Figure 1 (cartoon, rainbow, N blue to C red):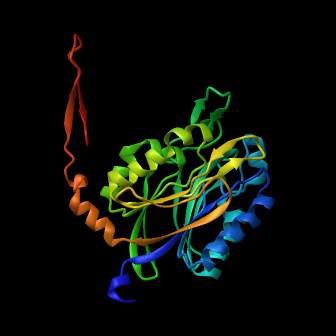
Figure 2 (cartoon, one colour; figure 1 turned 90 degrees about the vertical axis):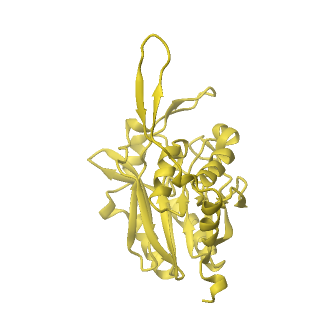
Length: 295
């Protein structure tokens, strides 16, 4: 590898429109992952809920297994080993604690071993004006740890911060990942169409700009069998906030060339990660309250 390419590799995002049966969704995901590998991608990311988009918890629990018995995870591990890629499965439903679910992201190395796991920290509980209602906390266990994973992609050392979908709205998490050394951040998602239209581009670009890191955000897109519409628009964003690759709504693969030297350049130009300060918030009024805040 010559010096000009010393910190470069090709990345790809898989955009899906998962349905209500894991058996139907797996071949579609596998086909697109193989397409991405044929296109030269060495880091490949799939969306949140890669193998199943189902709103009824009891129907989810009928199809998923504990991690040690998960057929989808075994398939993805074998696929990563066969193709010699870093395969980042945006998330799978994993059965935990009997009848509870972990929304778990897996980073799988080119030998097929699980290099890192991350359980979604922030759960989406909301009633939307259009009548859609989501109560992830009714059946999902939230994660308790942020995760940064070291990986080497075609000889290029990198550090990946792992998040999932709704985490995107909690900027302190991303600052913490960047301060822990992440130069790439993953945001696999299944954003609703309504909130995606309003906020997806702004938030994904903001997380890249705030952290000076590459952001990889593979997404679900279109009208699913369960009646839910997701926004799509999977994106790879540079540390400067430029959109390097973007999908529409249809299932597809998007590629971008990644140069991690840009992370160092951007952070040197805007060293905001080094300039945070602790401060107090004074509430002016009759209460006389003062709250402590860490930057």
